[in-house]
Length: 179
Length: 433
Image 1: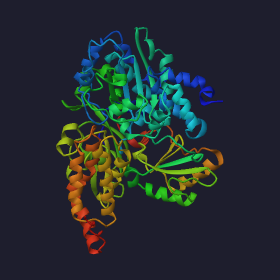
Image 2: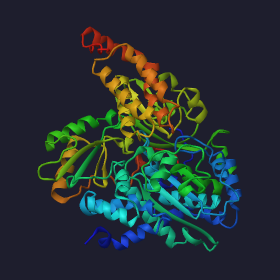
Image 3: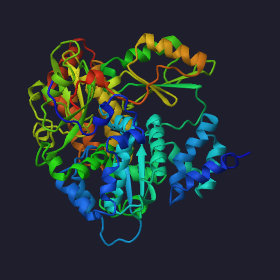
Image 4: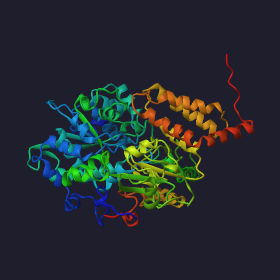
């Protein structure tokens, strides 16, 4: 079954949000990536057809954005922020720790296909650095102990209770601001 | 600890506040919408916002009501409101909190803005990485739609305004308003040449307003309590209201602090953020996100408002205040920021695309103690040939870390180069043919 047949209803709902079809390009690429873990060539062609675009138009757009994968990545994609604000509070140590623990460098995946490591720029969590994003979740205020626990949780259950919930920092108890 | 009234963070400071529609309504949520739709004409809503002095909280600080006033009055076709939730400026993390903890406050602001400008569709362009925030917003939109605050015939007034979340996909430049529109149209996020401005030629070439999350979140409060109330807060007449400052770096209590504009850097850093993490002296401050030039301890008493920060040689920008302690290498700090800008340059303009690469390479060489004294002039020369020569303000932003660190801490660059010379590590002169 093709991409457009599998997600017929979802595609129709996405298209209904926009008066111009092409606007649905990024949302449809997300659907394709969710399906396979990366955007396949056949999905790109399918999306081009849905949106009345040429495949190169889809390709030129997809290559501009960093969140789309054009090849498979590990089941858990660890993306560690290296920008100045996280670096000031220890992101380089976090990256080194992950490299040592998993035996992979940024841009590589573990042999079992479980983890991929990327070093990325600012993820808007500067007050709670060092931080990383794993698939759709943020993990903040990382320490070596927390990293060990997160990696172990991901291996065993696929998620970790250490992920960040709705963001509030500092927490009201420590904020001491007048209300 | 000085006490003052919170506006935007007030609800979320209440114990047990979940950000649900029921919680938001209990705190007076959506009253501004009830007071406005069909009761105050849209032009009067715009007039109130103009009178409040509200300026954009995304970076540029343009007066919001004035921006709305640029939309053509006699245009009969569709208009659009885009909420800029593409928070990507290093040092800034306030919009994420506003969206995740009190999404209805943002949504009420969006619907009010739609009403004021006559838009029946609003898009929240949220940075792709913020998956949780986008899910929370989508859930809140569903709640608001079911309660009649969003959609067709809102509260039976005949006003229509639908709101959709649109996730970006990891490109800092999409926070620039015209690049955001290009991206929302399904293209590469390349900035457009202005004019024409989005007010007349925006999304799908239609009249469009792009406003930041924090800007929009202020609207319900301005309507509820009146523009005069808002205009009296902060540093009137040009910097009114509060600002959610994001404090990061070497402080004891990093986080988002909402304070009236005009508070000094010293108060924010030492009283709110708890002072320096290791009790080392403060060395450097970035007052408004990565695009803002660095300030020094001599600027601790600068007031955090648009005018005073500009007079000190920097800018209030997105409100991201990053603090660095003594011992931090300023060449390294400049390099880290330059690596960000090099990575995120969209590539449309040669000075930015090529220049950012040269700046990074030169800084890396100096830091690796392989620099030459003439590199310092080369850096400044490159900066001069990037700033002001690009389609968008990205070029101006990327030279800020270098120009300001060279201005305040030139000696650090010189020492690294002197060490290189002493160790005879200077690269040989290139062969010239």
